[in-house]
Every structure is written in C-alpha cells, then in structure tokens.
Image 1 (cartoon, rainbow, N blue to C red):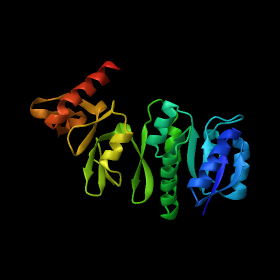
Image 2 (cartoon, helix red, strand yellow):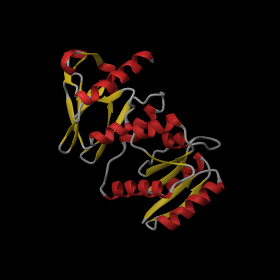
Image 3 (cartoon, rainbow, N blue to C red):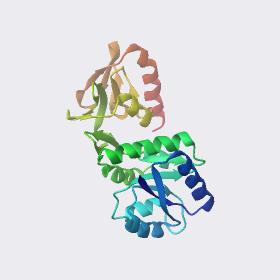
Image 4 (cartoon, rainbow, N blue to C red):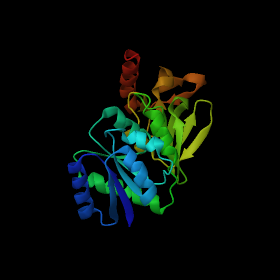
Length: 250
C-alpha cells in the first residue's frame, strides 16, 4: 500500500481526489491532507509519504516552494494543476508526473502506474527535481531528463547534436562527439521535445535545429563542427519548414 499526502488549499479539489483514489486506486491510501506549503513540510516529516499530490497555486507559497524547501524528498510527486503551458512543458522535459484539473480517471491511473513502477523497482529519480527547477527558470526548458539503467539523469539540450534510435532505446550524441546510451525510445523523445527546436530527419535520428547550418545537395544536412547527416526524402519538406520557422522567430 502506498501512503499519499494531498497538498491543496481547495476543499472541493481535495474531496474529488480522495473520491477518485478510493474508487480507482485500491493500493493508495490517503493518510493526510495539507492546505499550504508550510503545513505540507511539517506533515512530510511526520508521515513519510510515498506520493505527494501537489497543487501549484496555494496561499503562502507555491508547490514549487514546498519542493525546494523540503529536505526529506524521498517521495514521488504528482502535480495537480490547471493548464499552464510553460509549467506543463517544464514537467514534460523533467519527467515529472502531473494531472490537469478536472482530473481524468485514465490520466490518474496512468500517473499512479508510473509511480508504482518506480517505487517497486528502486528507481532513482532525484535528478528530476533539479532539472525541474532549472527548467522553470526559463520559458524554454534547457534540460531534458532521461533514464539510464534505472536512474534519472539530465542532459543539456544545447550540447546535443542529435538523438539516434538503437535496439535498447536511444543514443544521445553531443556536438563534441561524446555519446550516451539511454533507455528512452526515440518516439518518446519526439513527443516531449518542442518540434520548433528538434525534428526528425530520417527514421533513426532527431536533430537539434539550432545547430543546423544548411541543407546541402543530395539531402545532406550540414551542422556545426563539420557534422554531416543524411535527410530522408520524406522528411525533407517538413524539415525546411521547421528551419524557416526557426529563422523567422529570431
């Protein structure tokens, strides 16, 4: 049984979540409720929850304030929020679970499944929160959380030339030639990353558009540091559109 703490100042939201959990999450027990960031800090030390359902906007401090001030951060967090575009983008890049109000049952079950899998596989996710705080500082997140052998790590997007799929996941290839093998599938990375800055050039590779110098003859893509990649014909038209949009947005 997973112990849960709900942190939300809206009574209606708390009651709704309690009802959903009682009906659709039999392995989750709500052991307490906090109505502010400061109250949540006290209760975390008392009950040692496995999961914290965390609202963002609260009087006297946000959910982010609570996380930054919490020294005992051994729990998983599922954010509960109204739609805030840039905050949600930061969650995705940082591999943080979140639910949009009003909460949908399928989304709740999906988030809880991911939490359960992490808790029972000893998944180390500490780096996700550092990446989240860094990503929240800017409109466009600068760090991407990836999984490497059951650990969460983060990579700086500005250093990445491209991602390449392989049998077990993907390879992160940096502009300096260094590479990292990660567990994440290329299709998953493509869903998370902003298409304005990363785009497919073939079935195997997803490139950093900011590092592209030009599209040469015969579908060759010239990038910084003399790197040359092949663009498949079916991706060429879309790639040109993305590069033009990137140039016009500067």
